[in-house]
Length: 313
Image (cartoon, rainbow, N blue to C red; front, top):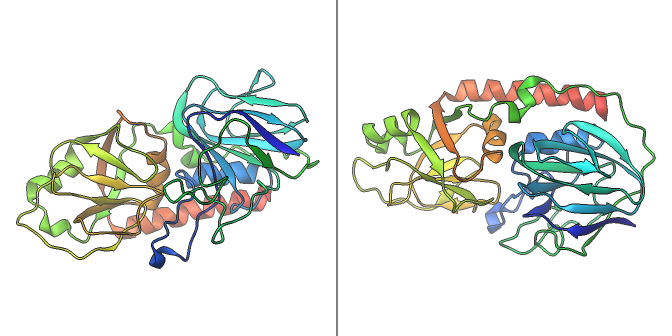
């Protein structure tokens, strides 16, 4: 018994924290686009943060719960209803056998995360349950959910914990127009002064050719001071590469493991969830910060999440 997929939605995939330890073999980490919302959904139902969740993109699925469980949704507000009653992100609730979860119009954000107590009972691949669609492994057959899929879950009788509102700094949907902070990349100094100013002073639009692997950005072309030949080297979630066209590519959760384009900047880790909640057609404004500031922000975020984990789990 578990969950039956009646309608799959636009793109609903299973993710835990990611597939670490295999990048030297060319296997991407994958994992959730919005790590904070994924973690909050898990904590709300009393799970460790590394349990798997369903990542829902823009248009949510319709799911039939065949056994009772404790469930929570975090991240984007996609007008979720349980048996016709509206539910908001950030609240845990008990679902009885026969309950139907549906989604409607987008209110805010782009990606929501559905957690159930005990996680989703699917076998890991290379130590992770994350779906990697380009490689066709992980999750359910390495693809988004389809109508008729069955997802096994443990039947849970856990009581709903009293709600503890997350700190405002974790509510990513409250900052839809916040600047995305970056630190200078390895090849920053090789770009023209005009290119460096353009990146941090002008807006860039997320193109329609954007997905979990990366966002292609449209805006002022970023030019090098002179031609540059580079060997391919490691890239990461948040790396901003610049191909010969000058239009930057922002690497996301399913990024490749290496790349040979110049790296003008890297998005700091605490702002990656903000990017995950942006849609094609929306704009991004980048702001430069230093490595020390990025590290202090990361430490502050980690302490906030640790405090929530102590309360819920």
